[in-house]
Length: 352
Image 1 (cartoon, rainbow, N blue to C red):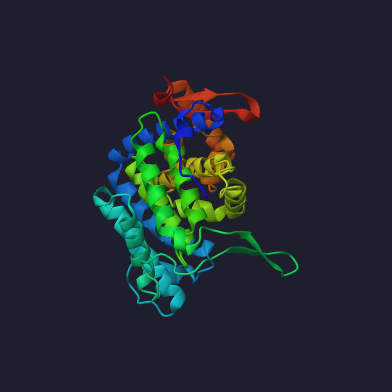
Image 2: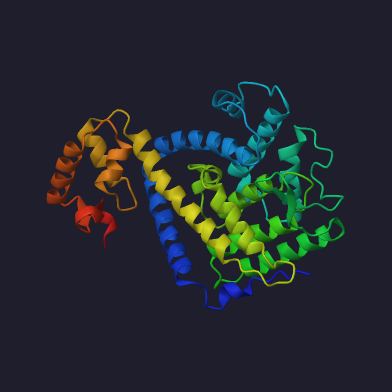
């Protein structure tokens, strides 16, 4: 039987790359909040984009798809669902909206998780909406020859309620430990949730909703402005590989959470990188080319290269980009880091 215990996060022997990445993400989060406070209207536009991408991405991971036009109409509430897949999409939208608008009043509990499952599935008419599985389930995969095999056997239905209770008690204990970084705790909780697999259907989507809620509770609201779910979908092979590696030996407490933690943190880091991209795009629509280059660098909380700027601004020539960067370096508004092909530029105020 698996024992839920996150005390290993407090023993000081975690890989340095994980600890360093959490520090980087925390710094990026603080800078993003500072930028949001100065650009409320831009972030409002980003929120609209992310909402659509989150609903699309999370459902796409599970093979629930429709056209981009229909996704937009459904998410914005301009159309009623026409089939079962679109009902599933409506359900995820409703649960996502509740997290975005009411996360401060929500607590991390069994009741909340069951409620999210109910909101997510009730439109599609799930028989077990808002209830744990009544029968044992398996996680299967199909090989290149079309043969199925069991990849993982989750907790039996008869033990699910107890496992969920133990998971959440362990979470609360770790959450209240000031020495445990919440960014390291979140992926461990999500991995355990997925290994329990408490619902007959919808476990993956609920895990992503729970991830967003846990991030909100930890002070990271990036998922409101950049779709965390879309980033997972963009590299879902890596996600599933990390999940498989970290769940190996889970039942006998021989698993390691490291791979899944790395995947979570790298995905979160990508969200902040994407935030820079989208902020520059939305904020620069009415600016002249030189101004757009300046804003792209100044608004990036991460060092950015000339090639990346050219990628964000495909209608601007590399020569123009280089000229504007040179001018900004001389003026002191940005700093040049590295040399040759490794050269990047960053807002001077971010260099202490």
